[in-house]
Length: 460
Ligand SMILES: Cc1ncc(COP(=O)(O)O)c(C=O)c1O
Image (cartoon, rainbow, N blue to C red; front, side, top):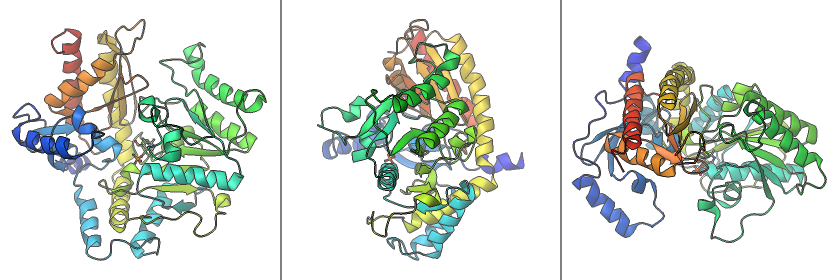
């Protein structure tokens, strides 16, 4: 109970509180300025039109003083919530000391490496900070794998999201990001991920995970498959943007075995699923395996300071000094905030708590799935939750319009969520892991109300 008090104090208790349907007049002014002056590529503020003023824990306040329950957490970045006091204190202390040192070490950098090593498996003993974004970490992981093996190809999975830069974009499957820009980085090939709800194999659903692994092995073994031996296989611990697709542990175990057998580097992208999100520090821990390289970002900067890293096995540490360089290779404020945040996470058993809260949330979401004619599947692990919307439960026809309506009307009622999935028909929930049970359940209740209104044709 005492522990829960610590979490309760982080957020605004009385959220949500909508005073004016967003965007209110003050938000609208700022949004208009953005629309006139920023790129047409800006996207989140189109799905959730508002201008934000402040954040506290799992709650956000807009310029019209509307208070929201944040169930999106800045795309999974804000695991420790907004304005976490312990993290902010560490950042404030650092900012007056030194903020940028390239990769010249400081005691702050050392502390960050040491805290990261304490949460990583011992096998992943080497840490490299590349650029500040998740995409940068993916670029570096692939570069290391290619350099080490001398091979060029990479196998990734259908539904994958690895980023928006050269190689990471080529590894990302969403045509909305890929199409119309010419040729992407070559050498990337895709195989199906074990997406049980939309079983890609036609086998019994309980066999999908094994089938996905069998298929991967088949393309590697078959000299006529068109797949040459890759440098690496990259996969998300839990597919995020692809629609929160949760593999069975057997799948990751099989991929591990296949990589070992074929001498291929296994990269697990934990940028979204890592750092407590799924109830373990890293999603691969659910399968009891250790990848060769892991990518980490998002929550790593404590309260959204941009930072990313890869951690890898000692034997791959063969690239010479300067093989890969860059200006922003670890930001001192992000290091200070990140180290403080990770320590707080461990001390307060944040991953374990996320698992418990996620299990409670899934009970309610599964009830919604049973009762609703337009919820195809509710799924989740820890606080990585999703509701896949369909027109018809039998045909499973995807309903991206319903998912977007959930985003729109939940926002208007004070809850922020996002939309993802192969068919953009999945309402995705990535609340800060510090969210209270009360706020989480209130948020889900609001989403349930929106789903009911969609079903009854009360909203369009
Ligand atoms: C699994 C995964 N990998 C990579 C990225 C890219 O990270 P960033 O947007 O920071 O470049 C994301 C972002 O959502 C992600 O979810």
